Amino acid sequence: MRVCFYCNLIEFKPKGNVLQFFILLRALDRKLAQLPPGERERYSFECVLPFRFRDGTGGFTFRHIRFHQADQPLEEIIRRDRRRPYDFIFIRGRNEAVKLLRMKRSLGSKLLYLAVQYNLHDPYIMRRLNYVFRHARVVFFQTEPNAERYRMYQLQKGTYSAQELARKIQVLPQFVEPLSGHSPARSSNDPLHLIQAGVIRPRYGLPVAVKAIKLIRKEFPQAKLRVLYPSIVGKYRKQAKKLLRTPGVVDHGQKSMWETKEMIVQSGIGLALLYDNTQDRNPSHSYLSRILECMGLGVPVLTTRTVGNIALLGANYPLFVEDARDIAFQYAKLSNPDYYQEMCRYVKERGMRFLADEAVKPFWAILQDEYNRGL
Image (cartoon, rainbow, N blue to C red; front, top):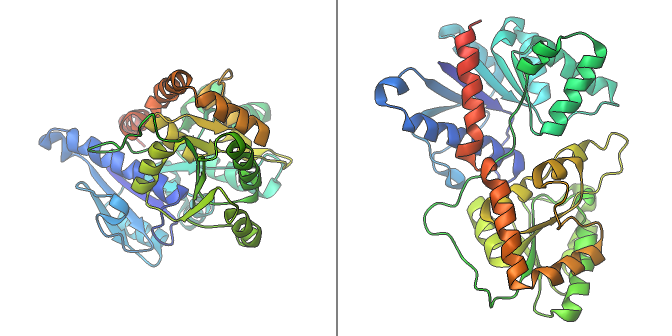
């Protein structure tokens, strides 16, 4: 089985889309390593990127996946397929998938496309997504709600049968790398801190988080809001920088994925707010990868009640919050050691299926099924 992976990444940065792509590849690399040598020889996994990836960058090492740098990645994929045909071409990115199909329509029978987001109210986006869906072999969505929403959309259109949609629409969730080696631990005597990690955008509620830490520090003066981020959305930079200078807020800037994990454990309470007032409420059908990081580490996370988060944490998850007062109230509850440990166990149990080696199993099974099905 020959598979080529591609994601339109300009460079390696410790941010969501980059990390998710490399975590997937690393989980597959470990899966290949587990196979007996004779069986492993049947597989050839490659990755084409517009930049040169050096093994070990960001802590990602590979033994069984070969990386190729190309200034024109799609042209390189077509060239390599012509020289030695791939069985599957995995692409993350709608524009890239559209471009590949327009360059060589016949590659659709090999295309495994990861649809990150879409907007039912945007005709341009839906035309392109439907175009890719029509020609691709399998389309993956990152959450069950997003997959189900598209499945219902297509059923209402009546173009595909339910059986065809059940095969062609699959879920490939975001997932996280477990901490290897010695895991950091926090003492029950250490003060609990809030930690918010990821790109800073207006809809991610930094003002709410800052207001919350002000309320919390009235009763728990040692508490801090730690903020880690690879970047700030341009127009929001001035306001965000002002918020990051608030007393009780610690601006940590950019950290590696591994440093972020350690800081989440040492802080004790994750914070992942998502507010969306758009017509489609599209982000609300997803969730933030920082929630999965907390779950994988067994760290309670305060988050908003979105469709994606309900699917992730359960409708009765007790740590859903809406505003700063909710956050302060839940912080006070979590300062009870028994309740804190109860929440640690809950999120860790829910997060097991999103650890990379576990989460990649369904994807591996789909590869096998589609390969056995043939072209």
